[in-house]
Length: 401
Ligand SMILES: [Fe+2]
Ligand SMILES: [Fe+2]
Image (tube, rainbow, N blue to C red; front, side, top):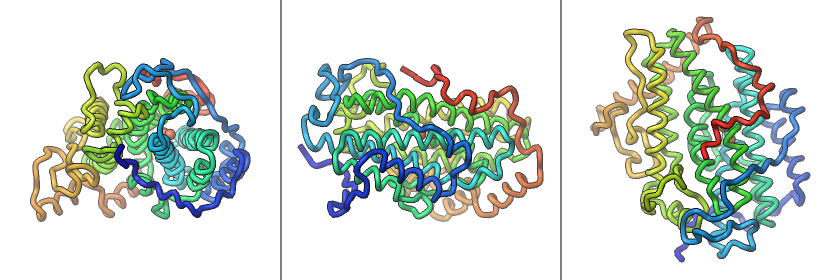
C-alpha cells in the first residue's frame, strides 16, 4: 500500500514526560491556568471520558465492510492504518484545545451574563473533547499516544502552532465568537459525524456525547447571529464580512481535493462520508473531502436564509460565500473569485474585492465602536435556560443517526 499518511512530525527523540492518565490530567490543569481560562466554573467542573452507543458493531463501509469493528489496536490489520487513525485523533483533539486558546479573552466582554455562562460552557465542553481524544491516545496508542497527548497541550494557537490554519486565528470579539461557533463548530460537527462511523469502535463511541455537546455550541452561535441581525444595529454588509471570513476558512477545513489520506481513511473504514450510511451510492474515493464540503455548504446556506427572515427591511440579503472564495486549500487555493457570485477576478479587481468583502482593520474598529457604544447591538437572550442547568442533558436532536 502506498505511504499516504501525512507525517505528524512524531519526533522520535521526544521523551514523554507523562506515563499515566492522571499525570496527563496534571498537565491539563496547568494548561488551563497557563492560557488564562481557569474560571471558578471551569476549575470546579468534573471532567470525564464518556462513551455512548454506536449504531452497529459492524464496519459499514470500505474494504472491511461487514467485519466486526475493532476494539483495540492489535485487531487493526496494518501499521499504516493504525498511524492514519492516530493522525485523525490528534487532529481532532488539537482543534478542541485550540478553540479554547482562540476564545480565551472573551469572558470580560460578554454581552450578557447568559452569554458569559454560555461561552464558559462551550469552553468546558471543548476541553472535555480534547480530554476524550487524549484518553483514546493514552489508552490505545502506547508510547506514541502518550507523546501525542502531551504535545496536544504544548502547542499554542496564539503562537501559530496548532495543526490547522483556522485554529491559529484569534477569535477576538463577540461577532467573531458567534460566527465561529455557528460555522467552525459546525465543521466540527461534520468531522465528528464522519468519525462516528469509524471502524475503530472506541472512537465511534466517543462521538455521540461530543455531538450532543457540539449542538449547544452551534445553537449559541446561530442564535447569537440571529440576535445581532434582529437588533439591526450592525449593518448587514459588516456582518457579511464576518460570514465570509469564517465560512471560507471552514471550507478549507474539509481538506484538499483528491486527497489520498481521505481516500485511504475511507477504504480502511476509519472515517466515513458525512451522510454515511444513509447514502446508498458508491463513494467517489477521489472526491470525498469536496463531497462533504458541499454538504456543509448546503447546510450553512439554509441557516443563513433563516437569518434573512429577521433582517431589517432594505438591508442586503446575507449569503454563504461561494465555495471558491478565499480558499487556501484544495483546487481553488490562491485563486481569485468573487465572494458572492464566484466569478473569476483579475489581480487588481480582487485586491479591491477583498477590501469590500473581508473584514479589514477599519471594519474591526467600526465593529468594536458599535459594540462599545450601542447597548442594543444585540437583541436580549429570551426564555433560555441557564447553560449550566442543561450542561449534561441529552440533546437528542443533535445525534443525527
Ligand atoms: Fe468540540
Ligand atoms: Fe464546539
